[in-house]
Image (tube, rainbow, N blue to C red; front, side):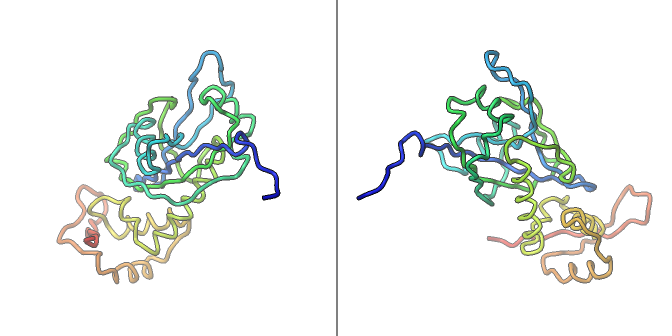
Length: 240
């Protein structure tokens, strides 16, 4: 067939996974990020950055397994359900000078194009205590609306994950994954307002959520609060 064949070198690319882990501390929606650290004495990095937990997929593993492995290696978090939500493959996504300096110190082929599979998850922050390892100098929770400028296109990845979270908050009621097992309607409304980044009318919100079959009122009220204790509720997840 007529035409020009691309060389093997120009068609090679790497595949990575990046994990967006959302947590809620009953006041703010947060994202787990890592801070890069020096990894090679012969290639010191002058500008270390923050980033999402992520790394390359090994030839012998699936994307799902890679996401679990990378999260464990960098933050010591395991047993978390991770869901694919988008693929990021802009040709220049890892080729900025500030990112190349880091990749030269870390990878054998820093110039190679990288396509990343984005994963996201919702966790109760009380159940998971991140601890940095590998090339992560620190693992920390940051307010989703106050994220610093990060490496590569990781800010764009968080924005896309937040877009997905907002969609599924309405469509699939996934926000309950971020709440304690027992919660008040005020806590639930505050979560929705934080995730959707808008105020909601209290009466209309309660009218709508109380229509949910899976939202069960409990014969319990808050304890240890200074104000009048509110009734507690529980979300009964559908059996698969």
